[in-house]
Length: 227
Length: 254
Image 1 (spheres, rainbow over the protein chains, first blue to last red):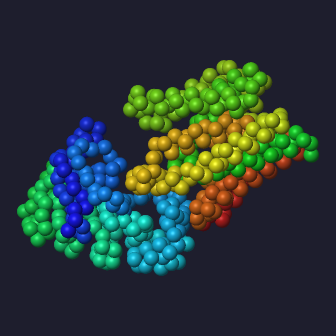
Image 2: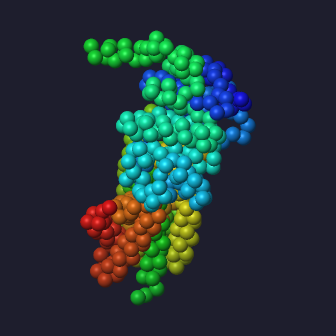
Image 3: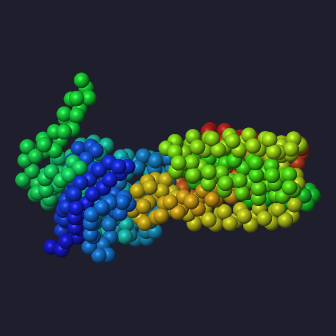
């Protein structure tokens, strides 16, 4: 399998604070790499560094000419703008044919194009964001917490969608989350992150000790703050 | 109808339309009050222009550039939020404006005066309005995406800082044109109210910006016509028509 992404000694510092420390990992074609970590672990920052929209130290090397699709976590301001789904897609110069294909991929009917973004359910909106990232056929998708704020049945359908897309489009997926369920369902590789890499292995080697180690700091912190 | 009035009407329609268009972008960027603040920043420049017999828009634009530069400079020097800095610059400008503008011209600077628009000024207003329109038209989709999410825009390779700068310059140019019609106190309303009204009525982006443009034009048109009949100041009449449309839109809100 070809290497799609190689990260070596990645360091990110924001306003004098070290957010990410010496990360090294790589992604092979067709892999689903899941990055697990508590809130504030630097997961979103890692995604931004990978997208090249944050300054960083170390090396991030994408395969030459690769196209990346990005699905952001939340877009709180989009509902303030009166915009139809079609117009949202058009921000990216998409052809009618491609839009139809994408809608089929994400399991939505064509009539959703006329709908105002603010009127969509959170599950529909999530699918539209995934669809938006699929425009112009990327080989890699980066996801930031795809299941946050979605109920259990909605989460289930997002997992299924990702699985389907991966097969259909031969995608390589990097997904950031604190949802453990998705790891056992989808991941080929799993990376535990809390500033540093705490584990990096196949999901079946991810033991409960590792997980409590990863989330332990956070639990202690909560107990402390309630005293 | 005399030529003078037709001149006023034409420049009003062009400026009103492009003000509505730009306003529709400002509302999505949550910058609804920026037009107000910049209207005040323009005041000393308008005062100097009146003293030296120059066009008020010209003086206004120079001072707007200066004001924006100062806000940018203060932002680098302090960690105060942008709105505090804008607040400082705009009240200081207001104070300076009051001191340097001679009494008889003060009302004109504050509320605008469309009764003295010359033929050359009409040409200039139309050209600048079209120019601003074209610039906004070019950056519109990028700015909408940046309003949705700056990260998403950056991940699409949009240079957000550069586009923001062009956008800010367009606002300055718009305010400089707008103060001629409705004066420095009301220019913020000229930009924002049509967009707010259109947002109440629209279900997609196209309806939203077209609505903003049309409402901007209609407000200027009706305001100017009522001015012709009543000889009350045109600026406040334009804004009141704009507000009336807004109130009507509340009934039909989608």
